[in-house]
Image (cartoon, helix red, strand yellow):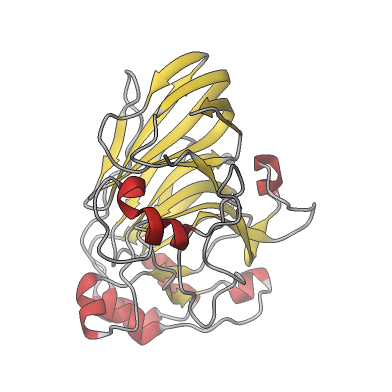
Length: 319
């Protein structure tokens, strides 16, 4: 029988990154610019990727050293709860630390991918773990913005005038379907749940404002993907036990806030991911403290015990 897996984080330096992931157990030194910790990943990397290896490895138990791709190949049904027809693993899970704003960007839509098979569709959601006072994100365009406005200002700071700046607080959930223009603002740390793709098309990268080295922009590709419809509303936890924050065609999110004692995860028979954001838990006998992400196979018992007041983001994979 499979057991709950803790996977080795893969750290990605970014010009906008910081050192706050050290507080979440990552090997980050003071002054580092680590923007991303890939908690669960199973990607064949793009040529310009910023991590050396895109496939997570198990760090605990008798299968330590095994790649997530190997688990998928050998134990797909036990792991996912349904028979996988393809790899990679259905989700990419990250922690992001934005010391400075991310590039203004968009990810490929299914329609774009259908005509450009070398790209990968990417829908994602952000759960806000930390936010400094007055922090915000950019999400979607202001009403009335046209494709001509964006084409004229792409690659310049003027494009920011057309973006919606949305204030954020810890616990907020922002859903970003493929085609949504977006950027994390400075001072925000999020858990990012997304479909398995690292394809990003940049429209602007704040090089003048923050003294960054130029990175390649992908303006024609981005313009072909943009959706000008109003963005999804922010989701916030509602009163009650383990509220369902979000459900998409690819994944769902629940937030658990518990002081102590046992509880069981969502009853649906699928692979689940537990991101421990505060406190400490055990799941199936596996200990997980703040900053640990646990992959719970569909075939594994999912009773969780809280032994230090915890906030846990539970992510389920939709078949």
